[in-house]
Image 1 (cartoon, helix red, strand yellow):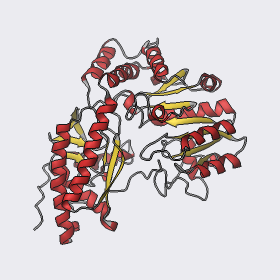
Image 2: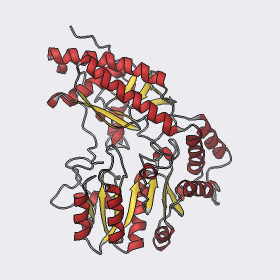
Image 3: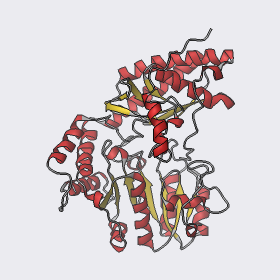
Image 4: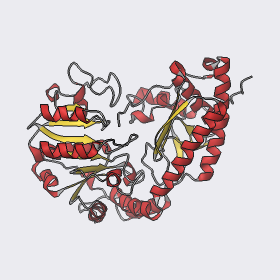
Length: 446
């Protein structure tokens, strides 16, 4: 006999989302926050408050967040009091005026101190735009147009141009079948993908684009460690081609190593970009780099009023200081290790087939149930939500998650895995789902 599933207690968020889809194309501003990616028709969608690792939805339900936790943007946890105090102080003293915030210089000094290979810094307020700035600087510095890339790097024209023409180059890097509607066709052939740890693919691009390659853009590491000197060879190929090596640390920065995972891996780029955990949920991003490359920003036009507001730098200065003080890297490693081991033990105990992936700072699991895998994950999310958790197969630990949070979460996972085992044995999976199956998300190669 399968376990009963509690009735969903509220509809405020899901109903508001139905209205939002009439007013906002796509319903949300970010693909990764669309309710369809989690629990179509039943995901709470909106929040009233967020503190630590607890989110309170519009129905007043406190929910413990064991997902990507603000899409990886709140490494200290939601509403960290030290960062909030710095931001409130800056707002009280004025967050915008005709002059510039001195925190811009302080953050630049700190970033270059943490990254001795870097000399200069420019700012924006989001990950996608800072990557676009980095590519613009690289193109200006080299006088070339072609970019080789690996993995996901945002929504901008330079990136989506990979899907112009007969091929679907982004199939393994973003979403299969993505239509680059609105991207100028003149950009065809300017963005060329290669896969992580497949050095021969990059070698082929470098050989074919000799004298035309402006940049190589990639995450130094995401879920898979570099093998056989892969990153060293990438660095050498960039030098041989006279191209700018750009490391995307938007997600990985400060999670596995203070300052970025490339410091741990021992390979320095020419430019590195940061966002998300740089400022713990407040809009802020930075590109840092070698002076000879960064100076090219003076030969092109990169400028925006709201890149000069003072909240972002104030939040970044407080966040970077606090991440070091609390030893965020060690804490996140511990929480991730506990969670990954707990997934494995619960799955083995309940006889539920799963595959655990990623690294402790960016961990994930998936169900290995053939064609039913996505349905099973949807049931997992539904059952965890009923029990007070925001949960799917992805977990980005924060400093707000404690071993006690993990212990309570894993007890609930064990209970839900037992439910899943029973449902699979009975063949009643479809009857237990209260809505459509969750949509598929990003398919990354890093």
